[in-house]
Image: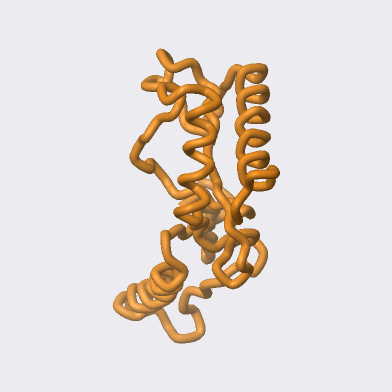
Length: 171
């Protein structure tokens, strides 16, 4: 849940509450199942508490504030990883378990129905010794070393592009 808004005065019980949330999954079918579950639970809880039909929760799904799961093409990801490792050194690559599911517009470009093979990767902007204590991306305390992040990110993307599109590229 990203936001909850209810009522308009501290001493008056509001008749409406608005919740805004995001649902993320690694598979579109699972995501739809989760969304359907929100509808079902909201209605079921209200009915179990005796809420009349005309006052049941209204679940609205945004048509614009949603993204499908981002799924990298495995073979393309392996090629990009190898090229970036060769460019920056194997010690620059961190194999870390995923700690969250980003919702990125990039997913639309590499969706299975587009036929586009792509790779979404992250570029660190925090010195290695500070990673363990670094705040999350959406924290008000999030901070990166902009010069290092931008130059490394640009170099990594150019390396990936040249690998995939260069003269020896093998699509």
